[in-house]
Image (cartoon, rainbow over all chains, first blue to last red; front, side):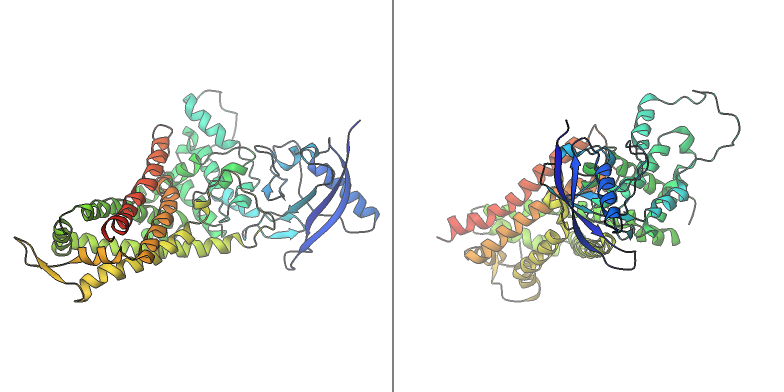
Length: 253
Length: 229
């Protein structure tokens, strides 16, 4: 038998990006085995049956790898647990009778689209600016054709774990996207295939990040604490030195 | 030149300005403290007054001093502009906010910095301005020096007043918090992060943030309790 939980969900409702929103509180009966998103599904079923408009929230894979789910739950992006996404947050981490406050990610570069769904396309444009390597398409290359030192591969893999969910921006008091951007720059910049375009990449991605209106990092570390993939602040230092090297050694005057 | 303008208008360019000016001011504090500790010498102020005279007249030190004023203003100006920009970039605040593993100092650098700037104005108005631009200070003469302004007496008079001592102690506490975050943050911004030396930077930074303000704070305490009674 799974324990039934009577909860109150205080959630942000907003019609669209042009109107201002407000909190609404809804009762919901959940059980402890549900994920947070399943609990919201139950709440939406209730709302539909009452002929009310369901809450718009983002989700996709529901196994913690896609980066689609967001939400700031009781003041923390992806909720109270560290190293997990909202879909991996289970209701057993809450208590019967809890009032749970659910807000959208807050950052000017992530405008609210509706309710708790925000527009994270700024991340896509940062990726388009330089989050790639240029190679000739064709046959898959031989494995291990390019030797990569194990430590470097490890650093690259750790940075590559970033799922681009935007929790770093949501957690940052400055609305900065430096943990995300630096993870992408470090992911490619540590590998021989990525080194070729490293200078161009660092400059283009930082320029796009600034253009999107993200804030400037002040090394608070809230991003690292809230990142569901535990991306490290060292990546930001890597980005800073990549960018500085690119600017001061580049040929452009 | 275009590349420099682009660089200093970028986020990392502005952060670099904060980092480098901050590190310069960190070095300045050490020099300033070493000079000030001469106030603890029990020689009627000779060591401190002749040192102050040398600082005011040595051409090399004059150049560094003007650089120092400029860096203080630049650090404050860029800091305020970054803070205002960041406030806009964050937009709406959360109704509930819970942040783990972050220090209070790191999230309040602008507030701490503004208080330090206000303290700097009070401090410079009290000593630097009176020494440089007024004839309020008495003069003394020491062997081998022309007429020397008696800054020592000005300092010891100031530190016999409780409210001035309180202002200085609060100022140093605020400075300590600012340095607690600022020291290691400056290195992170420069891209200097490595498991070999980053723990050392963090520890040196914490020791610095405690010891330097404490060193400054000893002087008003010493004067208030042991000299003015």
